[in-house]
Image (cartoon, rainbow, N blue to C red; front, top):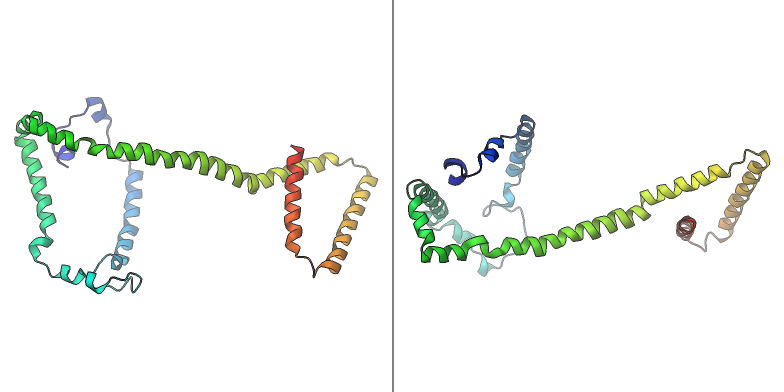
Length: 232
């Protein structure tokens, strides 16, 4: 906080001069979003309030010998405010050291003990590097190459609405090309269609109780896709 808001800037002038506050549109959006955030925090406070709420009921069971919530409510006040005291002491010490003891900090940093402490704590033991490159990047690549390109835009699109609409459009174009504007051709198609419908009706009346109609739907879809892809 001190290095960001209170100390003199250490960056390049071109970068600092290009920095600016968010636009009015962003501020208005954040102000609007803050209102439901306060209501959500107020109405869901029983989830985190601790002792004195029965929000979770019996869903979270704690053994009686491990129940320390009641004991935690009656510890000394000093231990309850200890995190706040340490935070204020850390903020005050950083302000004093960075303002009046910057030379002392530099001398300590270049000393033998300071270099050892600095090297020990530097880059957080490369935890971020290991996590980002070996764990985060793995899931990013998996999400893009496998989940997005193969599953979402591949299999789902191929067998989903996009593939079905493409096949329907292609078949409609083929049917449109097959129209010859001859009357006997249209009569023949009407006759064939009526025969198929009446034959399917009679077949259903005879064998409807013995065969599940969902089988015909599956066969129709599979045959439709096989014919479509065989043309390609």
